[in-house]
Length: 140
Image (cartoon, rainbow, N blue to C red):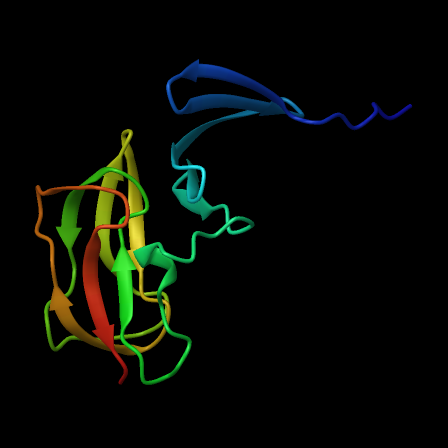
């Protein structure tokens, strides 16, 4: 007889860190942010709670127009580990532009659409805060 499916078991292990167990598998999930912008990181993937976006947040001010510049921001307090593009570099949707490190996890910051790097506002080793503008990408 098959075992009944149960929900995950979540245990707080430190400030902003949780152990999630389900079906014999374990993962550590790191959570940071504010009530308006909550971020989680697990196994190298970063997730944002978009059910309650803050319309005044710089991270949410991306104009949907194809003519608008794309602004990539830090999802949480982090250290810039690498900047992989410089102004004038063409990028494709999904390309990693900046690598951050937070809570011993690498957080790749990726282009959300094709374009050209217009400006870079960070450098390796710099500490950045949530919503800090890292890179600006102009339409291609």
